Length: 402
Length: 53
Image (cartoon, rainbow over the protein chains, first blue to last red):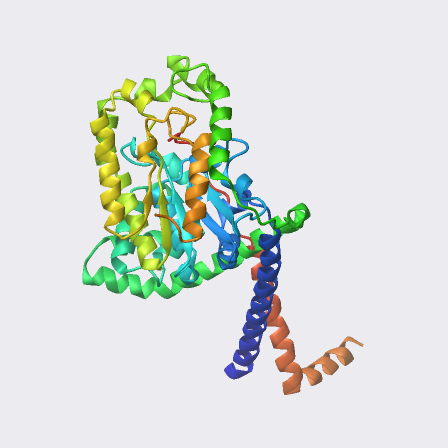
């Protein structure tokens, strides 16, 4: 009698599984068409799920770039999506970024890419200002927290136990994000503790966690496909036009333009940025809050722990990353009390940390005295700065980065 | 009339093939119902507070 119910139930489950598998294959083929055709640009869905990122990872002419506001706060004309729009040298960036992202959030995003990341090139971008605060604010972390990515990290089979443990310890410092996630919180707590019982309990809940991750991945596929269906204009193919980029000429043009747009202040900041954010000391965030403690943070911020988690994640996943930082605007920060010694200590530490993982680092530290490299105090890249960033990406993609 | 129909369906249901197909459809409907109810994820995040780096 029981078998009478068991067989139909099993049949129904198999039918649903087959339908879902077919659906996912169909959705992935549609996503693939979109990603191939899509012009380099930001999509909000990029920041929410990972379906399109995984598809972009499969494309040989896409370079995934993960970053923060230095990617989002665009300066027209010279950003990577603009310079590489028609794949002049054989690739275009696929950028995933949102203001405020720190290394811990980036580690979650990278972990969510799964086994396909092995052997692939990706760019990790950030600025020194990420290290000014003691740690990422709770509300910022909560706003950037993506359940799917955290599940992928917590129940990853690519990451070592030690990497997941370090990440779990940091994620538990933002308990608000785990209030409605009992399973995830339980797994992270088990990971964070180091007793044999905790290890056993983590592995006991692992199958449930993995199942929940698969459910979230299916939901993400649905989210991505409805997003694409609503935007048929994205499917207009971008022509591929091979061309040689004259980097020197582009730099001269960008510098001239930057100079013309940054002539109302001594730091080379864009005029509008200077007026809205710095001219009046009461609207300058750094003028109001930056003190000796912030300078100390440059060496003691928990961001260094998060950066280590990110680098460990990249290594465990077998990625081939380029770590792309930016220089301080020396003139501005000298005036705020950040001495050449403080700045050099940051560059040295960053260089040591990244070198310990055997990864290439480009931080443009030799440009910190270049007035027109940054467009504001947060080292957001100017027109001229973008030319250097674009060139570094191009050399990295083609394996000619020195 | 109702008796006739009841007797017809009971007889039909006694057939193992009909019973298996009916139960499969029944469980399929339950699974589809669950997917419709819970399938759409909530990808919204709390209001974002930008920590301007």
